[in-house]
View (cartoon, helix red, strand yellow):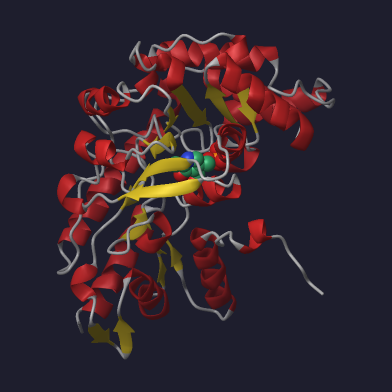
Length: 397
Ligand code: PLP
């Protein structure tokens, strides 16, 4: 008898991956699917980073690595935090993991007891709620809307806090909405958190460099009164086009870092040796080495927003970072288009896949059932063709 644990039975399947699987199925049938569903840059890892990896292989970096990361990589991370974020960390506060997803899972596992609540401003990245549930925590969703640029207000935060609140998790720049909290907005949230000193803040900054805001990126840990309570999560997947290399890291209070090191020591051991060596080179390079990718994303953002604004029924913000748009498409709910009854965002996303042959992701996956996520980590030609098809199939709505 196939008897799995409640833990796994209660876990949702990743809807982004489910959509990718459905798209693959249609492709196998010979359909020309344009994939705008995945959260992955369509660039290759820059050559200077690849060369560092090749050198590491030839230099015989093949042994187990220190559980929390090579000392030289920690040096590079510490320098990066200082250079880009004005944050001061020492070695005991850094843990390198197998992707930022792993970093987040560690943090949940070491801080949550059954029933502890974690505030998630919606929309949030798919895995947050599931990781929290795996650690027996309770996700508490705080809904935001397109009208407020998908930003949680201090009042909303205050209302969501209960005696059981253990953490708040957010990403800025945000996957999926592209929203970016300004320093002032973070201060507003910090003022509420200052009244609740036991709450830990998990600030996921993995899209830090893919940021089109004039004032740039702000980190919660920059506030002196918050520093001791913030876990700053980052990684190389997005900005360096290194999703498959699987390196993420945290800067955190030493007691939390110690606990993450301990759990990692029993489950995964240290992250991959070659990838870690390559990431030293990636992080030591000036940010200008990756700016061509950010410039490209910026151009595509303009393109996709212009095209979306040209389709009736899409209400969208101008995302300030990451590489997604998150339009509200609830205007289509209740309609029947080309024989498809659209009741919700999942129906809509599936309709786009089957009729326009464009893969997107339902907002349900991110805790927002009125929207869909469209990734613009695709070429301009693909974006143009995809939006042309979407406009065409919706002309019958
Ligand atoms: N955090 C956010 C907001 C993400 O979108 C992603 C990847 O999609 C991650 C973390 C995980 O990144 P990694 O590839 O480092 O595990």
